[in-house]
Amino acid sequence: MSAPDANLTAAHAEVKAEITRTDTKTALLLAFVGAVLAGTWTVARDLSLTVPAVIVGSLGLALLVGAAGLLLWSVRPNLRGRHGFPLWATLTAEEIGAAVARDLAADIAGLSRLVGAKFTWLRRAVDLTLTGGALLIAAALLTLGGAA
Image 1 (cartoon, rainbow, N blue to C red):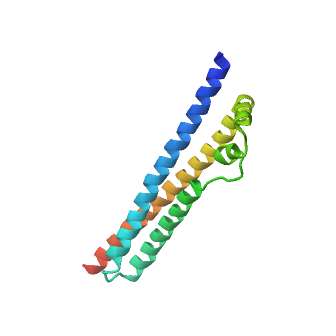
Image 2 (cartoon, rainbow, N blue to C red):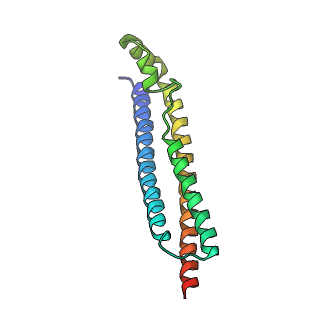
Image 3 (spheres, helix red, strand yellow):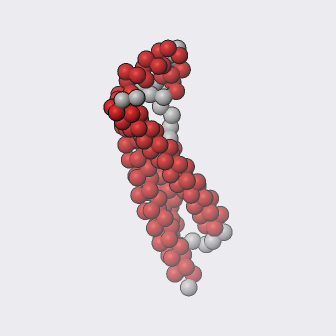
């Protein structure tokens, strides 16, 4: 294998590994957001909340639901067939070999754009999760302050 081919193969593997890492981070954050939403609902329904706590807590929950939506969007399958399984499913074994040989650089570029988009959605979801969590903490403090 020549050096340019080896470099392309290494770059392709690196981009695919980055997709896996981003999807793993997304799955963990989605599980965390789901747990926070469930826990908040469980705790809040048994408390007598003040109006400011309800408003702030509702905003926090809305941001967490938005974060969950962004996370789900970031792992939504791309079925347009440009890269990955849908494309390979339409080709014969010989066509797959030829497509990989001539289009590896294009595949790397397409997958890199996919990673960039996934990373952007993940970053936005993290920002919403942090803001939503801060609002839930503020709502808890308002509730504790109202009970005193």
